[in-house]
Length: 434
Ligand code: GDP
Image (tube, rainbow, N blue to C red; front, side):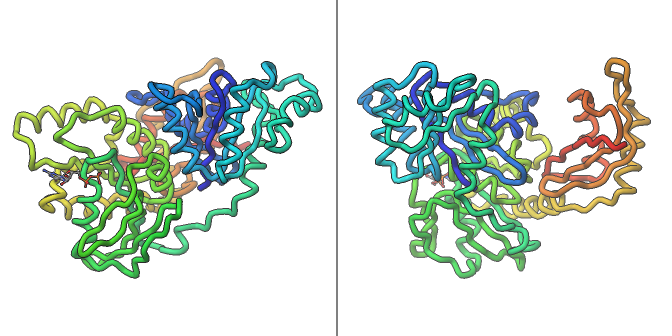
């Protein structure tokens, strides 16, 4: 999936545009407790095309020290990993020296750059163009992030340069694609080695310096899997070695490309905001999930109790997933993780017939009727399955646009319980039929 990176000086409207570009996915988790909202990474979708969006806060390419320097360093990493850059400027403020500095940096980026003039609502196209043409980054594209004008055209233009993804399901039917993710040093590489070390790795090609996540097919207990690599693994002797440092973008790409995520946590450390962020993305993506609480060998019973409670408190929104306490180093619990991966994959790929779904819907309605909103009470008539990974239950009826989030969650839980779906989230969609 293409990675779109937003750059620009502060106050040009990057976060507003970011929210526009990622809105569809964000809406799904807007009322989930425990998620930090100030993310700089998001997933967007137009039609059936997904893309990643990265916002670089306050990019100052000439800052040499301090927080501005740190932000610049992160922006540089994002630029290096971008497929396409959107350089945002402020149409009302006009061209500034800071814009020119950033433009100079971007001309050397070796990536496609689109010059986007924000806050352009009600402005003459020719005036917008005249002011910013001097940047030498092609024709400026006017948008209004606040009003949404021009945003759809912008996304279409950006995505037109990227070929459509092939459907991974076709290529490797029934072989789960797994991504092992987590913040640095939690033990991902150790787990990968425990998984791949003794196992047969089928035709593993040395990865080049490609920015795409690569897929490593392997076989375990007679079952086939594909590991979506997040760190550019390289085989050295018997073990695999990560050749890059942790990359958020690679992590997000891998989550998008896999069927089942194995989220690795480090029991010897506190659960951090970074853990919660990654967990939030997994939830957004709708992927199936298994959580491996690693380094369980290294802590005593007292600490184990604390870790369990901290996880419940901070990652309670992942309760659909199975949690395992493991030692990747000693190989303890790894087989159980793989069992749960199989179960989560099966749940994510489940096929549910319309009659069974509709019966379950009717039982739910009897148990607890949807609340009235204004004059209307929502009417839910029947349900069919609208997709997999995550399973989507499409409910048909009338007056369905005001169903409260709490009731949607009640329905989700009811379907998940009824069909014993463990390890995958489930989504409800409403469709008005006449
Ligand atoms: P990554 O950055 O997530 O790939 O983490 P690594 O796999 O490189 O592991 C980071 C450190 O944690 C290394 O020193 C590992 O030896 C250590 N480690 C990994 N798994 C375990 C475990 O299960 N128990 C203990 N005690 N240490 C572990």
